[in-house]
Length: 164
Ligand SMILES: [Zn+2]
Image 1 (cartoon, rainbow, N blue to C red):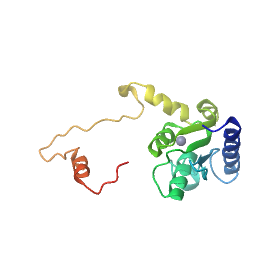
Image 2 (cartoon, rainbow, N blue to C red):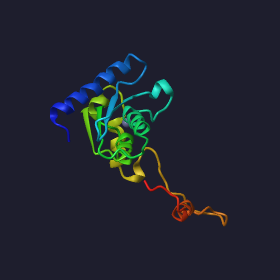
Image 3 (cartoon, rainbow, N blue to C red):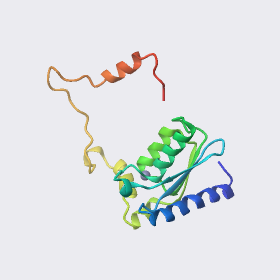
Image 4 (tube, rainbow, N blue to C red):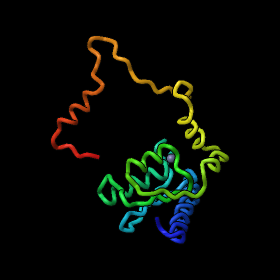
């Protein structure tokens, strides 16, 4: 982890990005990826600007960083974000293998101005049967039923696969 002074410097950048983004048609969220070798990549929330519900600042920062370093693995990087990552962004950070996440405002601050971060966290705490959005595993019925694990067999047999 960086020193508290450096963390503050990077978080300050993320917060400035978030504030400027509001004036530029985006949501009040900004993020910064700092790679292991110190390169910095910015991310802005562009959900309404691009009609992309996944265009959260953390995700756009991860995309920019991966494009910039030409690798899907951000091991050694830190994600600084103006607000606590939602479950999607947290999962994106896990997939990107970032080392750590530092945030400023939290999910309750976001909820107070109308964002669903806290509600989506609660989704995972609810029993599966009571969740607002059903997620169910398909049950094969017909004799021509597809084999759910067929893609994995294809993958396992592919010698040129790139593990991730
Ligand atoms: Zn998010």
